[in-house]
Length: 263
Image (cartoon, rainbow, N blue to C red):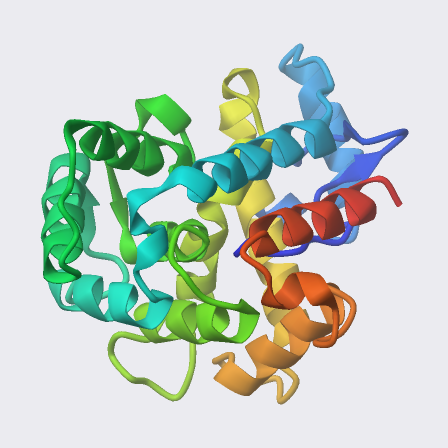
């Protein structure tokens, strides 16, 4: 499950080359985000990069790994229900080692017999979900939510509900902007290379602010499950699309992202 960004929120122009970020958070919130980003890139001597190619490669790698993941036999609702009590909140962090122990316990609870290769797959899975790839050592529930859903068994509706429930651990009225921001963090990390990581917080704020405004139809401080479902349905072109019910839903969202990145 991957969020679908419009080209504007990615600062994307000229055949998918990243335009630039602003010099301050205040400037990032203003109407001159893209022009301010250009100034900052030039000031820091950061070369433009292909946003859509980076993001596509990230989500494609997730889809390839999901096809052989040992977790693919576990229904997404059961999988997320198993992990949720171990977070205690969407900001509580979990290490790679802890994740692997829990995932192995989940597989055993499903009467599976995990192999040494399964352990390697789970370690690789944790790395590919993080904003920093192989550099990640721990993540919070928000960061894990979107990518992890694609490794379990389930259709679009089941995955969206599972992600929402994990992010809404406290059973509040809906998802606050902070939870959405953590959910988006790995995708921003995939879009912005290490040489430009100083720009990641600015991209993240811009994208999360724009998406939260678009998602929250009632202009409240929270996003409801229905708002999230309706928005996702529109982004992937309607609930009747075959891809919405297939195991390759992550690839379907990747295509939607690329389409908007190159618009």
